[in-house]
Length: 105
Image (cartoon, rainbow, N blue to C red; front, side):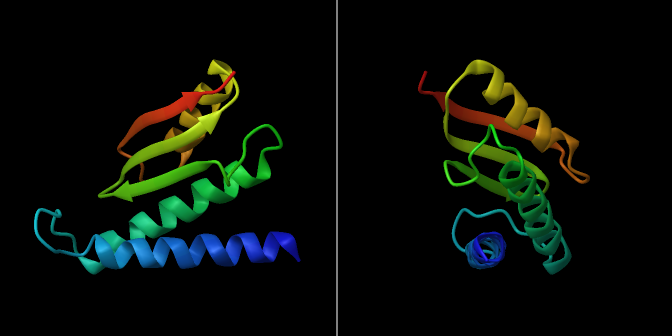
């Protein structure tokens, strides 16, 4: 039940963020297909983070724009910071990863 709720909330957050990225002042212009690709990347990465017992999908924010992933949030060690970045890089369609995760020790 909790896993279904987590997946549903990830999709909802991804779709909500998608609307904000589709234009507006200063926002990069993207096609609907690119926006769907970005949501897919974000959803796959959040699922991978949720499946990893060492990483917390709830403490790591994933933003994806035109295949460029930005990770924000907190992890306990440098090794986990690197692990989250490596997970992001392993997702099909990811062009770059901006790892802004903070190590809380």
